[in-house]
Amino acid sequence: METFDMGLKSNWRAFKEFVENKQKDYLTKYYFVYEECDCGDTSYVFVQHNELDEWLEKMFWKWMRYDTDDLTNSMNDIKVWKLISEDEFKKCSPLYKGSRKTSIVINGEVYYRKLIKINVEPSVIVSTDIY
Image (tube, rainbow, N blue to C red; front, side, top):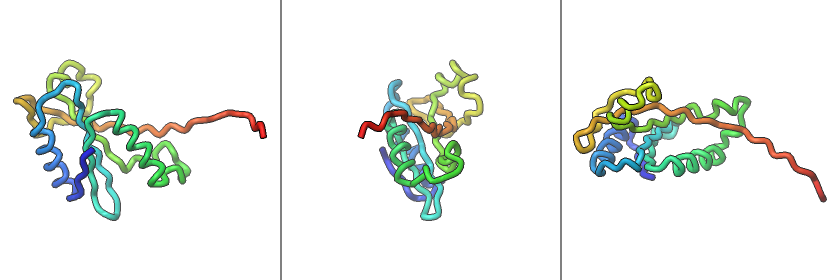
């Protein structure tokens, strides 16, 4: 995970530079996570989906997002954009509806960004009290 804390526009430029300096790898997916808060705008870069999910879960507890009447929307102020190659975008265009073209180019291929919704799913655990 990479962290940028220079404001949204500067963070996006830093993300663009970070991604464009990497070689194209079909196994690597890039995620740009933007947190808007009163203490400053911070962005994070993830290259693995599972690492992103683990971090989001950890932040859910750290930021005490569980203390709300609307658990489902408790993470709506966190924006996650997934980068999608133009080739992938063309192959699965219905899946990537609403994606926007970016100025990011890796090895001559243009990339799109898709806003990914964060799902907060409460769970129920049922057990007996044996003590």
